[in-house]
Image (cartoon, rainbow, N blue to C red):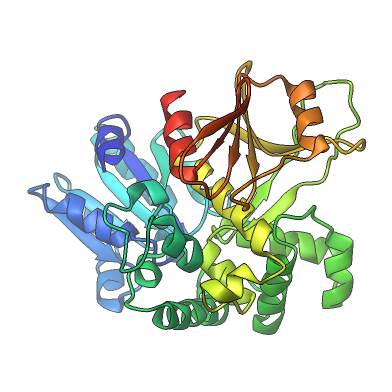
Length: 385
């Protein structure tokens, strides 16, 4: 909320983007309660949409009001009109638009409102945002958060069963309705199969040809599916580290299901016991850690993974200018890094490295390499901003 308020003093318009059901509308309505002259329109409601039949007349009527347009991706033809209105009024903090698609998918907005709009991404609940996450029998908040994911209605339910049912319904609705509303023309069956296949290769190097063969479609089609689901905030494409270290670096990205709860539903993981015995146990933890790190840091650090043909590897490399931080994810309570991780540190020479594991407290493994719980590493990296 603090960042949103600050940006409203710096830009004529703010785009608050994120997946469906992550809390964008709730946050916007909370903001509007503190703004005396404000108008909220949900473009999924026919009555509200009808009020924008003549957008120029609507904005003329509300020239001195703060306007919020929810689900803006349903009316991309509004963006050219919004540009002229923002320019005519010539003040910051005029407009807030909420959307379930990335700026790349809202091409018209990025082209027509360039220089007039700032984009903020709202994620589902992050571990750092959970004020009272410890339920009965839980020692630390990350257990439930990792299993259920961060979508508010999934995380806050009374039971794991209810949470799983909500996520299953979310996936079904997203495939059957939301993709179409985002203008994504993927057949429902193909979309669900593709999403499930991505869950099974979660945290692995992307192999478009293999997935295309399994789906029975062309490789460019699979690449387009990847871009579309990434643009809808369902997948994260983590690029390989690209600095010139005179090493033969892997050039293929990794792909992750962004929300750990959705990953577990797609993999038919219903509870903590299922997760503990599942082959994706380790890769699920890796994706969870990476998403929590990047969700908290935003775009302040460049993120990648490191892997060479010789076997050196590190799960997450954060880079800001010449500064490098290295993060390895191990789900064991007694983590033992591989030789590949130590070789990666020799190549990268980061200022600090962490091994994020479900341990009770942090301890040094060697100089500048710490084993630590996720919450500790989140605080440490945040402090290095």
